[in-house]
Image (tube, rainbow, N blue to C red; front, side):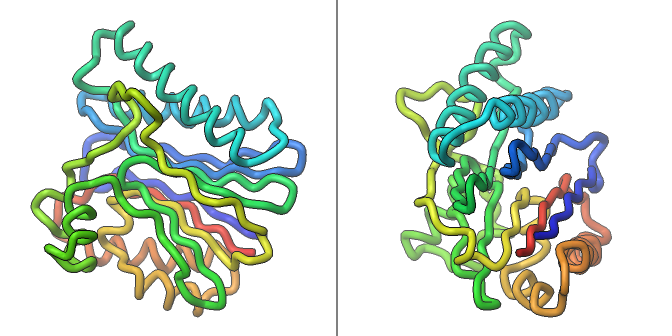
Length: 240
Protein backbone atom coordinates (compact mmCIF):
# COMPACT_ATOMS: atom_id res chain seq x y z
CA UNK A 1 0.00 0.00 0.00
CA UNK A 2 1.15 3.55 -0.79
CA UNK A 3 -0.51 6.76 0.31
CA UNK A 4 0.05 10.51 0.13
CA UNK A 5 -1.56 13.52 1.83
CA UNK A 6 -1.82 16.98 0.27
CA UNK A 7 -3.38 20.16 1.60
CA UNK A 8 -3.27 23.78 0.43
CA UNK A 9 -4.99 26.99 1.46
CA UNK A 10 -5.86 27.84 -2.15
CA UNK A 11 -6.76 31.51 -2.51
CA UNK A 12 -7.83 31.92 1.10
CA UNK A 13 -6.00 33.63 3.95
CA UNK A 14 -5.81 30.45 6.02
CA UNK A 15 -6.35 26.73 5.63
CA UNK A 16 -9.38 25.38 7.50
CA UNK A 17 -8.84 21.84 6.15
CA UNK A 18 -7.08 19.16 8.18
CA UNK A 19 -5.97 15.65 7.28
CA UNK A 20 -4.00 12.79 8.80
CA UNK A 21 -2.99 9.16 8.54
CA UNK A 22 -2.82 7.34 11.86
CA UNK A 23 -1.01 4.01 12.26
CA UNK A 24 -1.61 1.83 15.31
CA UNK A 25 -0.81 -1.85 15.89
CA UNK A 26 -0.45 -2.47 12.17
CA UNK A 27 -3.82 -0.85 11.39
CA UNK A 28 -4.48 2.39 9.52
CA UNK A 29 -6.90 5.28 9.72
CA UNK A 30 -7.20 8.11 7.20
CA UNK A 31 -9.23 11.22 8.00
CA UNK A 32 -10.02 14.47 6.16
CA UNK A 33 -11.97 17.40 7.62
CA UNK A 34 -13.11 20.74 6.20
CA UNK A 35 -13.70 23.35 8.88
CA UNK A 36 -16.57 25.82 8.67
CA UNK A 37 -17.18 29.05 10.50
CA UNK A 38 -14.54 31.55 9.47
CA UNK A 39 -12.40 33.77 11.71
CA UNK A 40 -10.20 30.75 12.50
CA UNK A 41 -13.02 28.76 14.11
CA UNK A 42 -13.35 26.31 11.23
CA UNK A 43 -9.65 25.61 11.44
CA UNK A 44 -9.99 24.89 15.16
CA UNK A 45 -12.90 22.50 14.53
CA UNK A 46 -11.16 20.49 11.79
CA UNK A 47 -7.90 20.23 13.74
CA UNK A 48 -9.77 19.20 16.87
CA UNK A 49 -11.60 16.48 14.95
CA UNK A 50 -8.37 15.05 13.55
CA UNK A 51 -6.82 15.08 17.04
CA UNK A 52 -9.82 13.19 18.44
CA UNK A 53 -9.76 10.59 15.67
CA UNK A 54 -6.02 10.09 16.18
CA UNK A 55 -6.45 9.67 19.91
CA UNK A 56 -9.29 7.22 19.53
CA UNK A 57 -7.58 5.09 16.87
CA UNK A 58 -4.44 4.82 18.95
CA UNK A 59 -6.58 3.51 21.82
CA UNK A 60 -7.08 0.32 19.79
CA UNK A 61 -10.36 -1.23 18.62
CA UNK A 62 -11.46 -4.74 17.72
CA UNK A 63 -13.33 -3.61 14.60
CA UNK A 64 -13.86 -0.67 12.28
CA UNK A 65 -17.49 0.07 13.15
CA UNK A 66 -16.83 0.45 16.88
CA UNK A 67 -13.96 2.84 16.18
CA UNK A 68 -15.86 4.95 13.66
CA UNK A 69 -18.94 5.33 15.85
CA UNK A 70 -16.86 6.15 18.91
CA UNK A 71 -14.70 8.69 17.04
CA UNK A 72 -17.58 10.51 15.36
CA UNK A 73 -19.59 10.66 18.59
CA UNK A 74 -16.57 11.91 20.54
CA UNK A 75 -15.83 14.58 17.93
CA UNK A 76 -19.41 15.81 18.00
CA UNK A 77 -19.54 15.98 21.79
CA UNK A 78 -16.13 17.58 22.26
CA UNK A 79 -16.56 20.18 19.52
CA UNK A 80 -19.95 21.19 20.95
CA UNK A 81 -18.29 21.55 24.35
CA UNK A 82 -15.50 23.64 22.81
CA UNK A 83 -18.08 25.89 21.15
CA UNK A 84 -19.64 26.60 24.53
CA UNK A 85 -16.27 27.14 26.16
CA UNK A 86 -15.15 29.64 23.52
CA UNK A 87 -18.61 31.13 22.90
CA UNK A 88 -18.42 30.13 19.25
CA UNK A 89 -21.73 28.41 18.69
CA UNK A 90 -22.29 30.09 15.31
CA UNK A 91 -18.89 28.88 14.09
CA UNK A 92 -16.55 26.00 14.80
CA UNK A 93 -18.12 23.29 12.67
CA UNK A 94 -16.55 20.74 10.36
CA UNK A 95 -17.22 18.08 7.77
CA UNK A 96 -15.43 14.74 8.09
CA UNK A 97 -14.68 11.64 6.08
CA UNK A 98 -12.75 8.73 7.55
CA UNK A 99 -11.47 5.39 6.26
CA UNK A 100 -10.59 2.79 8.88
CA UNK A 101 -8.57 -0.35 8.08
CA UNK A 102 -8.38 -2.96 10.83
CA UNK A 103 -7.22 -6.57 10.40
CA UNK A 104 -7.57 -6.58 6.62
CA UNK A 105 -11.08 -5.13 6.60
CA UNK A 106 -12.10 -1.57 5.82
CA UNK A 107 -15.04 0.69 6.53
CA UNK A 108 -15.71 4.40 6.16
CA UNK A 109 -18.05 7.09 7.42
CA UNK A 110 -18.70 10.71 6.54
CA UNK A 111 -20.72 13.80 7.37
CA UNK A 112 -21.01 16.88 5.16
CA UNK A 113 -19.54 17.16 1.67
CA UNK A 114 -16.02 15.83 2.12
CA UNK A 115 -15.94 12.69 -0.01
CA UNK A 116 -14.52 9.19 -0.29
CA UNK A 117 -14.13 7.51 -3.68
CA UNK A 118 -13.44 3.77 -3.88
CA UNK A 119 -11.84 2.31 -7.00
CA UNK A 120 -11.75 -1.34 -7.99
CA UNK A 121 -10.96 -2.93 -11.34
CA UNK A 122 -9.94 0.52 -12.60
CA UNK A 123 -13.44 1.93 -12.09
CA UNK A 124 -14.98 4.15 -9.44
CA UNK A 125 -17.23 1.65 -7.73
CA UNK A 126 -18.74 4.17 -5.32
CA UNK A 127 -18.44 7.56 -3.75
CA UNK A 128 -20.04 8.90 -0.62
CA UNK A 129 -23.12 11.08 -1.15
CA UNK A 130 -22.80 14.66 0.07
CA UNK A 131 -25.05 15.92 2.83
CA UNK A 132 -25.82 19.07 0.84
CA UNK A 133 -28.66 20.80 -0.96
CA UNK A 134 -27.25 20.15 -4.48
CA UNK A 135 -26.78 16.44 -3.70
CA UNK A 136 -30.41 16.21 -2.62
CA UNK A 137 -31.47 17.95 -5.84
CA UNK A 138 -29.42 15.45 -7.85
CA UNK A 139 -30.94 12.49 -6.00
CA UNK A 140 -34.44 13.80 -6.68
CA UNK A 141 -33.64 14.28 -10.37
CA UNK A 142 -33.93 18.08 -10.33
CA UNK A 143 -30.31 18.55 -11.45
CA UNK A 144 -27.69 16.29 -12.98
CA UNK A 145 -24.89 14.85 -10.87
CA UNK A 146 -22.28 16.80 -12.87
CA UNK A 147 -23.93 20.09 -11.88
CA UNK A 148 -23.37 19.61 -8.12
CA UNK A 149 -19.84 21.06 -8.19
CA UNK A 150 -20.91 24.45 -9.52
CA UNK A 151 -24.44 24.76 -8.18
CA UNK A 152 -25.14 28.15 -6.51
CA UNK A 153 -26.19 26.33 -3.31
CA UNK A 154 -23.16 24.01 -3.23
CA UNK A 155 -22.07 25.40 0.16
CA UNK A 156 -25.41 24.74 1.84
CA UNK A 157 -24.74 21.68 3.98
CA UNK A 158 -27.47 19.68 5.70
CA UNK A 159 -25.25 17.80 8.16
CA UNK A 160 -21.94 18.65 9.85
CA UNK A 161 -20.12 18.03 13.11
CA UNK A 162 -20.86 20.90 15.49
CA UNK A 163 -24.65 21.25 15.13
CA UNK A 164 -26.69 19.63 17.88
CA UNK A 165 -28.47 16.45 16.85
CA UNK A 166 -30.92 14.05 18.49
CA UNK A 167 -29.31 11.05 16.80
CA UNK A 168 -26.01 10.57 14.94
CA UNK A 169 -25.99 12.31 11.56
CA UNK A 170 -22.87 10.72 10.08
CA UNK A 171 -23.31 8.00 7.46
CA UNK A 172 -21.58 4.65 7.95
CA UNK A 173 -20.73 2.21 5.14
CA UNK A 174 -20.83 -1.56 5.33
CA UNK A 175 -17.53 -3.23 6.18
CA UNK A 176 -15.68 -4.86 3.28
CA UNK A 177 -12.53 -6.86 2.72
CA UNK A 178 -9.59 -4.66 1.76
CA UNK A 179 -8.82 -7.15 -1.03
CA UNK A 180 -11.99 -5.94 -2.77
CA UNK A 181 -10.61 -2.40 -3.04
CA UNK A 182 -7.94 -1.17 -5.43
CA UNK A 183 -7.67 2.43 -4.25
CA UNK A 184 -9.30 5.20 -2.23
CA UNK A 185 -9.45 8.97 -2.49
CA UNK A 186 -10.59 11.10 0.47
CA UNK A 187 -10.96 14.81 -0.27
CA UNK A 188 -12.65 18.09 0.59
CA UNK A 189 -15.05 19.92 -1.72
CA UNK A 190 -12.32 22.37 -2.75
CA UNK A 191 -10.57 19.39 -4.34
CA UNK A 192 -13.40 17.42 -5.97
CA UNK A 193 -15.09 20.53 -7.38
CA UNK A 194 -12.05 21.01 -9.64
CA UNK A 195 -11.22 17.37 -10.43
CA UNK A 196 -14.22 15.37 -11.61
CA UNK A 197 -14.82 11.62 -11.39
CA UNK A 198 -13.68 10.94 -14.94
CA UNK A 199 -10.33 12.65 -14.30
CA UNK A 200 -9.92 10.86 -10.97
CA UNK A 201 -10.36 7.50 -12.72
CA UNK A 202 -8.19 8.33 -15.74
CA UNK A 203 -5.33 9.68 -13.62
CA UNK A 204 -5.50 6.54 -11.49
CA UNK A 205 -5.11 4.32 -14.55
CA UNK A 206 -1.98 6.29 -15.52
CA UNK A 207 -0.36 5.98 -12.08
CA UNK A 208 1.77 3.31 -10.46
CA UNK A 209 1.57 4.66 -6.90
CA UNK A 210 -0.32 7.11 -4.71
CA UNK A 211 2.26 9.89 -5.17
CA UNK A 212 1.85 9.90 -8.94
CA UNK A 213 -1.94 9.71 -8.73
CA UNK A 214 -2.28 12.56 -6.26
CA UNK A 215 0.24 14.72 -8.13
CA UNK A 216 -1.79 14.39 -11.34
CA UNK A 217 -5.07 15.22 -9.58
CA UNK A 218 -3.54 18.16 -7.72
CA UNK A 219 -2.18 19.61 -10.97
CA UNK A 220 -5.69 19.35 -12.44
CA UNK A 221 -7.18 21.17 -9.45
CA UNK A 222 -4.58 23.94 -9.69
CA UNK A 223 -5.06 24.30 -13.45
CA UNK A 224 -8.85 24.50 -13.21
CA UNK A 225 -8.64 26.90 -10.28
CA UNK A 226 -6.43 29.48 -11.99
CA UNK A 227 -7.95 32.95 -11.86
CA UNK A 228 -10.52 31.91 -9.27
CA UNK A 229 -10.72 32.55 -5.53
CA UNK A 230 -9.89 28.93 -4.82
CA UNK A 231 -11.15 27.27 -1.67
CA UNK A 232 -8.80 25.28 0.56
CA UNK A 233 -8.22 21.90 -1.08
CA UNK A 234 -7.09 18.70 0.61
CA UNK A 235 -6.85 15.05 -0.37
CA UNK A 236 -5.46 11.68 0.64
CA UNK A 237 -4.74 9.15 -2.09
CA UNK A 238 -4.34 5.47 -1.17
CA UNK A 239 -3.34 2.68 -3.57
CA UNK A 240 -3.10 -1.03 -2.76
